[in-house]
Length: 236
Image (cartoon, rainbow, N blue to C red):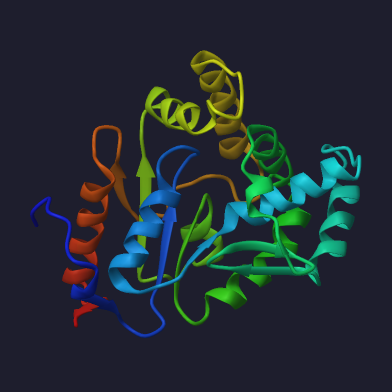
């Protein structure tokens, strides 16, 4: 396939198609997922927002982020009020997505996401919403959330490049230096890789794409090639 981005109207996904995109923070999962979704007409469900909401709410309520029982209690209180859609996460009718994008909330999300009880409580919600077909990105989508997805991708990139991307996103919101973002990213990677329950791990049947030197369009183009060869997308 060429590196030329296709027109969005060229493809449509087969009915009920689920696509798993995993990778570490800053690898480009969210951006790639959104662009791929536009190409093939599927909704994107960002699992990271759910964990960010849990971490954010725990912080707002003064709950210690190392107290698993207390954090799980926060999740229980949230479940009935959460609406998770392609527009982000709403709580009790209010879209709170913009409040969940800070580095502090991201760090809190990484901590609560390592808790088995929290992950188990959110797993059913994720699987239920994926049933009609979607692109889902996260860290354990291909291994735990959507183990039977017919298309799985693992996005990789160097630590410095991932940190540069994150720093560019945050520089208008935070005074953190690039070196500080690199160190925070390394700590987050370590937590994600070493957690006992559903760690960051590439599924054995996932295709790795290193995005360090690739444009977003090039990554999406490679994914479209895989989907086309597997007859998971069709010409309109």
